[in-house]
Length: 120
Image 1: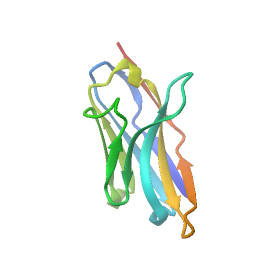
Image 2: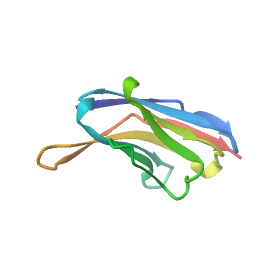
Image 3: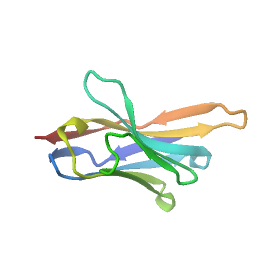
Image 4: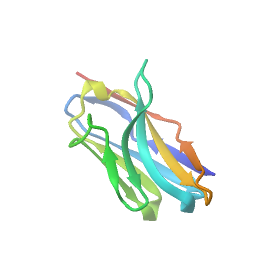
C-alpha cells in the first residue's frame, strides 16, 4: 500500500506560478512511476506529467514548456512546478503512484486532490 498526500494548491492570477507537492509513504520501494493528473469540472481526469523510477518524464502537450515534474527521493516527495498558469489550468490536481508486481499487475494509488484555480 502507498499513501499520498498533496499540498500546494490555491488561487493564482493568470501568468502566475504554483508548486504542488506530494509526499508518499508506505511501500514506496515498490513505486514504479509517479505522476500528476487533473480533472476540471465536467471533464475527464487527464494526465499532466509523469516521471518513472528511472527519471524519464513525459508531459501533456498543453503544459509542455510551462510545467516541470521532479522528485526528491530523500524526502519521498514529488513536485509539480507550474509556471505561466492559464485559466484553463484550473482543476483539481491529483498525485498518482503506480506499482507493478512481479507478475506485471499494475496498482494505482491516488492522493486526495488539491484545487488549483487560475483567475483571468
